[in-house]
Amino acid sequence: MATPDTSGMSAECALAQRPEYKDLHRQCRQTKDVPLPHSSGILLVRRCTCPHHRYTPA
Image 1 (cartoon, rainbow, N blue to C red):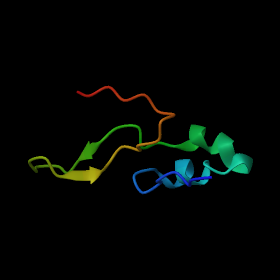
Image 2 (tube, helix red, strand yellow):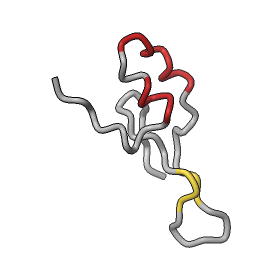
Image 3 (cartoon, helix red, strand yellow):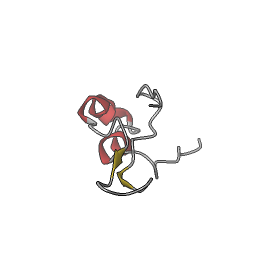
């Protein structure tokens, strides 16, 4: 069984890949990109790449 790439996921969603922690997806708060103030395209926090979150580009 292949392990999913969790490098772009929040800590909650990365742990939720384990069956006994699957309810942690609801705890994830990284649902959108947060830009660094007064910057041009630099992100302070990237959104979680977990497929459980909807992503609608701005």
